[in-house]
Image 1 (cartoon, rainbow, N blue to C red):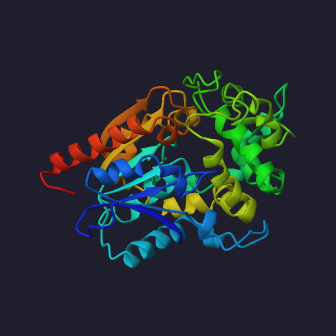
Image 2: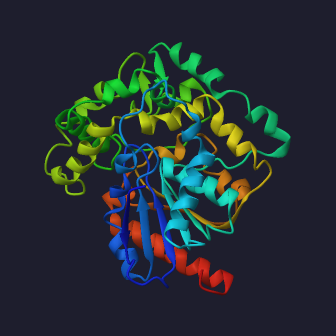
Image 3: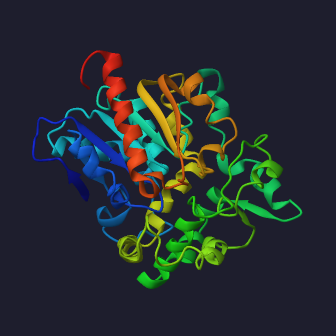
Length: 359
């Protein structure tokens, strides 16, 4: 596994494990890692399986999905901690897809992961025992996809698109091509795009979901690059929170590895693998202190109606609330790094005080 570190000079420091989302890398934490290290932590951010320099090369769509299941990502992180000589981390901090990995880690091994920061994507948690059978129904058979396709303006959920054979070829390309796609995609989901004014959705219906921007609910038959391309000019060179030089890091890695490795996790979601892995912990809550952080202009927390409200009621036993970063969209730790860092550090200090000892 490839990783970035800060504050590693002192092995006695408590450790923080930072998990990135899609389409990102460990590099997405570059702006918060130095500040967390200055606060006294050993900060570790790996490229997850299938991503960046952890990936040996491109992955075929037909490749076995088993290596990309959630329990194998957990094993990756346990092995990484063992290689670093760590038996425990003070907190696991996950953004976007990394939020789900972090949530699974704390469900499975609260003895290893001392607290959790969920960012942008609400973690649904384990199902209740009395709803376990229903939760194991294949998500790919969910009627919502047919309902979206039947709208007067036919639509497609981005999970459905990302799990399709077409998604990776649509996004793969040279570093220049990938950079153009990512520039538009990052901008479209940021606070810089004026259309990001999220609101609660009435329910899990096609009509309600279609209220979200097209990067979540695409026009049927339109690729993700074609969907976000009109935003490229507005979010072009000169972006203060993602310079062309920083963007090139992402573009170079994704041009080398392709997008299919990262997209395998969406296929695991759609074929029921994720539901089965979570089902192992049916009836169990996240026991360690938890917090949710997102950008004020991020649709991510609201894309699954009711999911955000479940954080304290069902998913987390020690929930320290939802906190929203002003002037930030989906990429809060990049768009408003200082504000995101302050929220994380405040939570770490409070969770330590609540327990009466240093994590």
